[in-house]
Image (cartoon, rainbow, N blue to C red; front, side, top):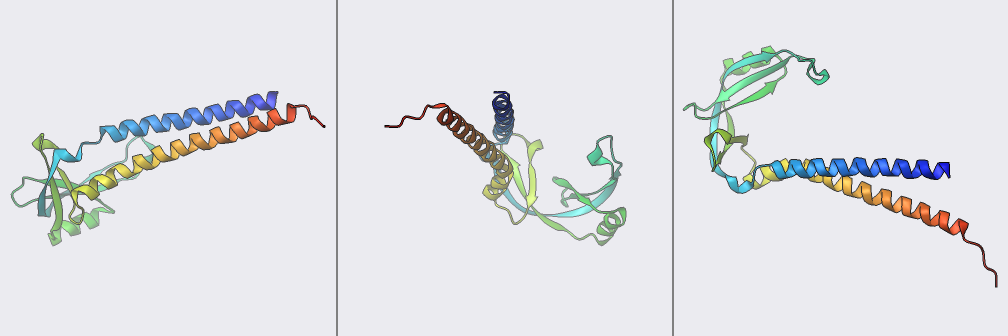
Length: 169
């Protein structure tokens, strides 16, 4: 009986873990802006204007120094920042002054919420890529719950079959 309790307890913990993953990713998916809130404003040329260095923080994942190059359009209406490997690379990008073509997605709600995306992406493809990690986690959590329930039901069926008396006729 003790082993059965441990199996059920472990399965219960796994199901709870899958439910938590499911809920978190449903909320993250729901928090994404609606595709209808944006319109494609076309492709603009962005030029490197400066770079900055951010030292690593307290978090283990931020222990290394990060280098960033700021890009903006000629009219200075749109800008974005891109990470680079080193300060030398950042300086070289600014000295070369080569432009990058990026697509601008304008927010229909506010001007502060515009998105700058790769020029090869469409609005639909961008949102598809934005949603895909959350959808994958939701599917994985649902499949995890189904597999655990099937395994436990099979285990319970086996225990029930073992306890039934044999009837010979």
